[in-house]
Image 1 (cartoon, rainbow, N blue to C red):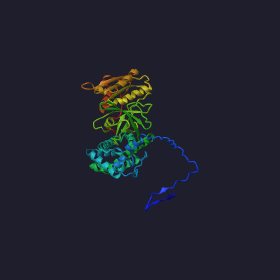
Image 2: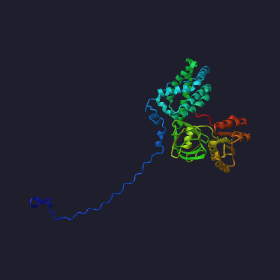
Image 3: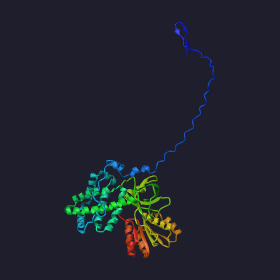
Image 4: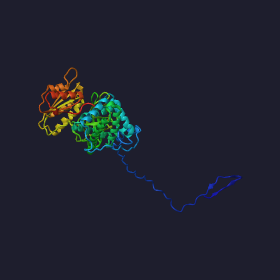
Length: 460
């Protein structure tokens, strides 16, 4: 723009802008700004409930547990050194079994050290396997030596050995076991036995042990592969309910991430995120439900890592892992036999599940007698529910039994109501109660095949 400058004396004046010419076109008035329509709201991404749960317990190269132990992220699996075909492994003969048992007798006084040496060899030579084991190995060492004793006892009974090892192989899959792992374990176990076998170990004993271990590995692999054909290694299950039913007793309701097949009376191994690689068996406290939910009845026991975590720490939203259902304490609905059900403490969980299943299928003329035991009345936390069922079904009788003080024990009360002709007995509860109840019923005349219960004692 042109400007004029006026001078007054020697001081210049501020420049004055020239007046612009009058425009010859009408001014343009801009249209009012119209805000753009808001973009449609995008729904927040829906994250699977179970997606963040996998790292809690995942077994494999690079998992959290492996990283904690400094295990390499990837390592080739050991090569299977023993043929696994049915005709490749001959069972040990009587002379070889005598050598096997002599070595175990020599190792028994130092079994803990021998098994510790075995695990040290495995983890040193195959560090990728460390992630499959719990942090505390004392129980694992004891279980391993007892498993070797069991195999040595049953080696001359093919049916018993298969009945023990094939289910064990199925359970190994929940830990991430692969067929090649057994060959690696065989070699380390032979070296551990050679170190601690003393004078009982020689070339003939080594040959006998290698033959037995080849047979053991073949049956374990058979169970491993059988389970892989029928089920995943585990299910993830969200805790959707946790109720304190009695002192140190919780009833947990779980929602699995996919359909979970089971029968009333069965149990499943359970792992919590707080104790990785530590599995404990718990029976289902309800029959299969249309909504797919599962129920567990858990008592916190002293020094029980998993039970205390489930009773005192688990809350809705936590995620557990379940192995495949196991156990043969199920009802044959086609047989129509009467049922004698004995449940002590949280053992009433599977007993109640059996009653629910009978009610769902129809009693078909059978009688069901339930004996429900606890030390104190507060321990009969499921009594009202069972009595409600009894009021609806004339075939069901429920008898509560309190054993506090000098009163008779649950097995003694059951025996007082004997005889039980034509009944099949189902027992569930503390190990001592189950053993005592089974013995009492056999004394009352029930044949051994009519007394059914899950394995009692330490977890396999």
